[in-house]
Amino acid sequence: MILVTGGTGLVGAHLLLHLLQLGKEVKATYRTTSNLKEVEKVFSYYSEASNSLFKKINWVEADLNDIPALEIAFQNVTQVYHCAALISFNPSDYELLRTVNVEGTKNIVNLCIAHQIKKLCYVSSIAAIGRTLDEQAATEETDWTTHHANVYALSKMDAELEVWRGSQENLPVVIVNPGVIIGPGFWDTGTGLLFQNAYKARKFYPPGGTAFVAVQDVVSLMTQLMDAAVKNEKFIAVAENLSYKEILDRLTKAFNRSGPKIQLKFWQLELFWRLDWLAVLLTNRDRRLTKNSVRSLRKTQRFNNSKSKEFLGRSYESLENIITLSCAKFIEENP
Image (tube, rainbow, N blue to C red):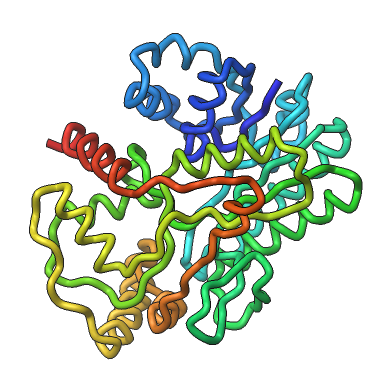
């Protein structure tokens, strides 16, 4: 039996579908606020048998910090995919990020050890990959520093340390560090917001860029690592390093809309994050832009995926197919 935490997220939903199509028995955790229909909807994007596949999932209501509920979820489990996480770049969410991403991962690791789980796969992020000082692409071995790291990156790095602790206690682990994950569904959270912004066809675009990857590539890499004889290793999962203008151009083209033309100036961004801070102070809404976010735009960091290619013989799909599918589904659901 395989346990997937965070089964109601983009990666978790696609992973569940992939595992079920392979004929695996799966459990998945969800929270009371989760929408299981969103998962079934994702299944329908790829399979006519989406309803019957969805019904095969053994859902367990369990928060990452609810040990008794997690104990139930771990019964008769041999492998664990830990996909659950909180994504926020708001400095005021730092303690909550630690509670979910760090303490939650600590609990998963401890339970894996206690239940003698055969292998744990942890979904981290390129946020927990070090940055280079020159134009070289970062690798899994690039030194990581807390200097200028945002609160999300700090939480993911500390969560990785919990996973490595587990490896020192004889728990076989693998860590996947995806770039920005492109995939359909969950339009109001995470990278779904990228599709929302592209659909609005704004004239402005931010400087800088990052690495992107199709959700199917992330899921495929995860299952490949769990089935391979590899352990206690981490792997960057990226398909392409793109500027934000390049990814927005591709998305707006798929939406048949005009791409952005004007790059935002750094003085404008410096002003915007201060105004955003003031607006949050007055209205208590979520942060949309932070000081560290603007700082990260000053250097486009590229990421090297050669370890997964050489170690596992992998290749990565072009982003065009997943962009086309995602934009088509977005239009269907947001007429």
